[in-house]
Amino acid sequence: PRIETQYVDRIVEVPQVQYIEKIVEVPQIQYQEVIRHVANIVTQEIVRHVPKVEIQTIERIVEVPQIQYVEKIVEVPQIQYQEIIKHVARVEVQEIVRHVP
Image 1 (cartoon, rainbow, N blue to C red):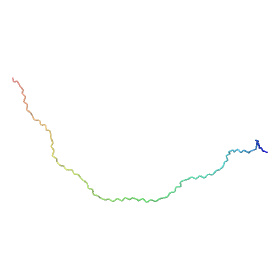
Image 2 (cartoon, helix red, strand yellow):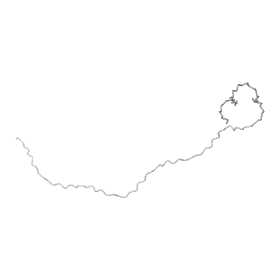
Image 3 (cartoon, helix red, strand yellow):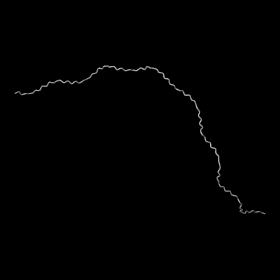
Image 4 (cartoon, rainbow, N blue to C red):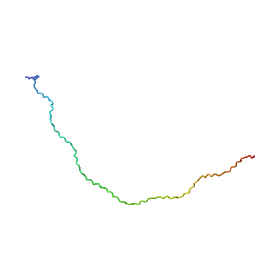
């Protein structure tokens, strides 16, 4: 004997629960740690030695030679030409004829 198996499709409705997600905001407190870097100014005094210059004056007389010029008159012979106009009387004879009566 040969056994034959046949398949039959049968639809059976099985109830299933379907979950639908819905977003609902729930207020919740959340604490966060904030680290803020703030400058902490620390003043340190550093001593630095600086030489203080003190000026002391000493008066000293130093003789400095000075050249002093003295003017002296020296006569230098010089030829000087001058034009002299001399008026000399010149005799000029004119004959004037006069008739005597």
